[in-house]
Length: 150
Image 1 (cartoon, helix red, strand yellow):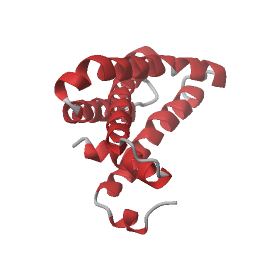
Image 2 (tube, one colour):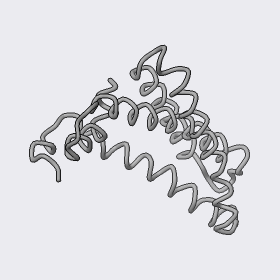
Image 3 (cartoon, helix red, strand yellow):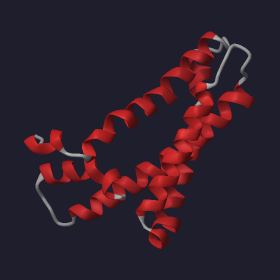
């Protein structure tokens, strides 16, 4: 259950563009690799592993080393910049693009950015909920976590 005023919130407006960017990073390269590079679905899945590894590395380093020193704002801003750079790199794919020169760098940048954003937003939102036991408060804090970091 979500509070009725949620849709009027200024912070909720960021959810749609971020969701579309994440969808674009996963969907477009998948189609590109399978149709233009003629790789199988299994190979395509393995091609995304560098992004998964970079997301894990970024989220772990953000939580343990950077967040306690700098706070959430620099991590979320730099994460959004990295994710945007990765997305822009993936937008520029064409028929002559290759995995190592064109897809791989975009996936790495997007993974580093997503790792910085996700871990920081969830950690900050969970910290702000504190001792609240109401599921609605916890859900609202998780939804607003990325914007609260600003």
